[in-house]
Length: 356
Image 1 (tube, rainbow, N blue to C red):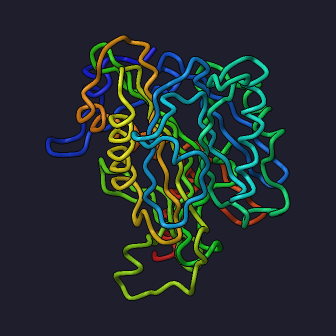
Image 2 (cartoon, rainbow, N blue to C red):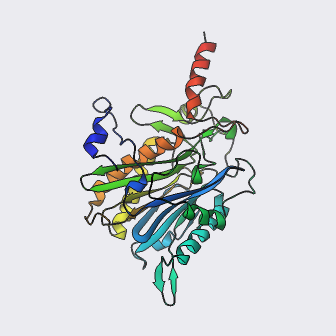
């Protein structure tokens, strides 16, 4: 169960004036949410499903300039359907959208969906990220992968790091994959009064991941020799320019969820504000190469109406915490030379030793 806001934020509080983020928890702390992963270790790649079988009010906000999505128009407040039955996040670029079909099939077999004449139609919005440069690009999530993710879904805390939609994720790649690090998938939550807010995100960014409590780069662009973290913005401001990354080579995708009661318009506002969590932890973000997309889900299981501005602000903090979890839980890939966060300290010490 998620701890209260007071308990969660009082522990290890940074100095006055610093950013404070929630610690621990997961999106499954929101009643009515289940999460399941499918991870294909051959490449790696995968997909992650956020199940809301009983239905949840949903919104979405797309900020990146190279998105790959499904059913996002349906989430507009002016459109008909009020609730969705799952959200699917996947690797594999546009090919990965096929995995949403497996989620639809799994839900239909169990009678979950929107009643439309003689049929029950599951509503499954989806978003994909580009991970085709990691391993064999011909291996990508398909309908069977989406179905398997549903089979694995549970209300317990999901695995984090190099799993599911984050299995092939990378960060810090504006200057090429040879200087990138591992991204990943992370989750976090906080309980404020009687309402819970949770987040889940697959971090596959052009930019670096920054810890806003310290301002330090956690994972991102490495130096040309690969021995230390150089940082994307420090390198750009020093006059170094990228050779030319192709559009759609990145994308951070995620979901913010609450057990409060929200309208579709309020859920959309919550999704918009959750992007502030990305802006605090990823630099640069929302570039021409990213398709950054955040969904919002409101299960209403608490029975309490939510203040969308307050929930959006809390959601941004929870999303920021989930981004940090994503890269800190990731594991390195030796084949393509993609190290993970635990190696960063070793590079720093090695570099310092070489300088004498």
